[in-house]
Image (cartoon, rainbow, N blue to C red; front, top):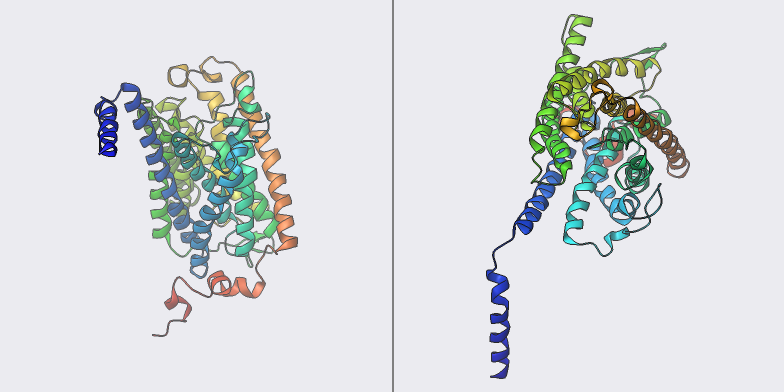
Length: 433
């Protein structure tokens, strides 16, 4: 009887808490957390987009391998970012790296949500590398690098810009709202190191000239671009970290217009150059516009977003041609889309930022050169750290594991040689029917 009375008393004592009206603060916190998680789920879906773009732009015999890499770089990357990366990126420490919060020690529910949003960004940086090294890289070697970039390389640059590091402490703090440099250029410069380290595909360069190796599925690549564009709304608008932030609307608009302008510009350039609008380059033009606007999406006007995206769509066409001319084999144009256009988009903040949108004026709007200088500093710092660090990592992986598939395996296709399975049995002749 005494126990029943105690239980009843406890329930009565809890009633005011249970029946209490939620406060504005608690409602806002709930909305913000929900928005952050929803945005994280949108960015996670981009992994499917990357898998489709990369496999569509490459040959059928490597499709399963590419799908497997995009699945596992998120799986391996999540573990690395949980164990080490998040602490390096956001833990308190020095101006160059954090030294706390490893294994999410002592995290609150809000911090769990924040980690979820950040881990999908880390996976994006990792998966960019997959496309540039497609069709000739050993699966085990790729997994080793996926862990390295998500656990160490990406978090270090992220700490500099987003974790209270030295780039955020410049006189004009470095601005990279959603990651043109922190995510995309980091992935792009790592991809450049990987493409150089692994070397070109067999038959790509003959007598000094680039030979076109056609991808097996433009529909798959196109669907991948649509998925990436869709996920980018989580990428950019989600970077407000708050569903109560009204600037989400403007960010969605600048994201849309830059992508549209990038696709249109790339289409126009290829149409003028070859009298036919190139489908693959137009797809990359849309991605180039998205990458270009990611740094300044919250800081520029809609009209400026169109200009930034159009320049990105034009740059990507020239960049793809440039890397082919120096014999850097990038089957999907990842270096050009993410590395080069990421740098352009970051620099563009120093030109096109407007106080009415993000509180800062760029050079073209009377803000002087200081913001442009900070943007250039961040671009240079990311390249000077990521490219050599990645190249050293790839060389080490080559010594320990072996980076490149054998000539026989490459010719056979990595589906069969690496996984003993093929995405399209009918095309390879291995179907029992």
